[in-house]
Image (cartoon, rainbow, N blue to C red; front, side, top):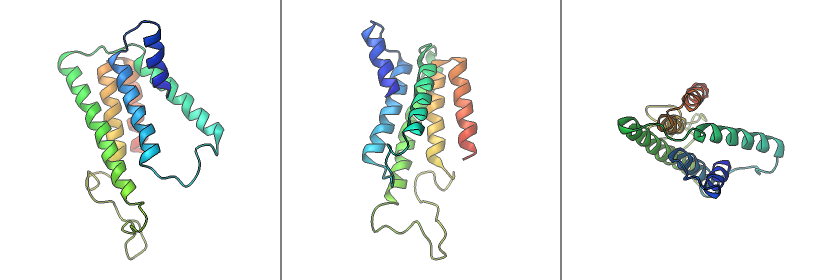
Length: 166
């Protein structure tokens, strides 16, 4: 939502939306669509309004930092950044779909006979513990490369370090 507001404001004031604005908006639109149509939650997103507001504010600041300087990359770096973004977003969606399939009613393959959780099969789960996090990082690295700015590059580094610890 914050990135959509930025997109609308830039358009309203006569600025052509930058490529980075579109990439951030696409990323967060994918997240919203996943929440609406793919994920199943046991709670309600309105249960803890304070946490939701803090997370929303963080996303707004992060969105602004990614798009404030526009797209500065060109040539091979721009192409590589766009490829990383596309691979990251699509890979993240794919792995979220795999995880969501484990939560379907009647599907009990997530537990083995010993009662311990089983690593999901398919995608990159055989190579990485959390490939959806890996893909999330790859998508943000794509935006950072397209931006070419120091702040987005440092944010992508921070996100990668944070997700590696998960």
